Length: 207
Image (cartoon, rainbow, N blue to C red):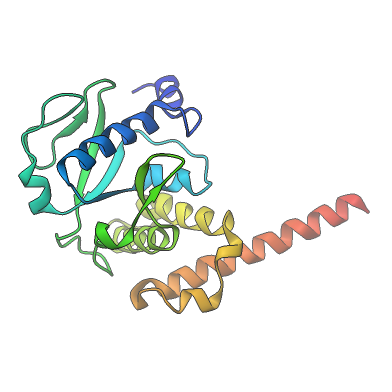
């Protein structure tokens, strides 16, 4: 996929082709009674970090997904992990919460962490559950593949915290899963330090 096509797919969040794919999946899920929530890049973008993504990541439960297969039409799927939006050719990655992902914490249940976004008209994972999930993904990749591969997920966590700073505190992190809490606090502290440094830099310019 070319860089130009990636930018075209993403565009403005509300009326982008990627968001239309998410809405088409929501229509499918609603009509079939499928519990799901959007995770990954689209969930990160929804929470204020304007980056691009080339697929849609959907968290659901394996047995519920099996019940609606095969799928033909705007959303097409034959096998468990072979799903595509036929209008755009964009892959929809189906992630199962009830599988072992070899991460510090398990995948969350989409029925518990999903929230319906009235403006975007689809189910997304909530901010705090997204931060925990992204941190778990980062720590898993760091252990298995090293910092170069894991860096993107850590960057997502940092930006999610930095761009939603008023929603985070050390008290909030005490409610997080113990296996990701330490890394989340470390990332939070880095975002706080960067914010203070930027404020000092602006004052120096003004002076």
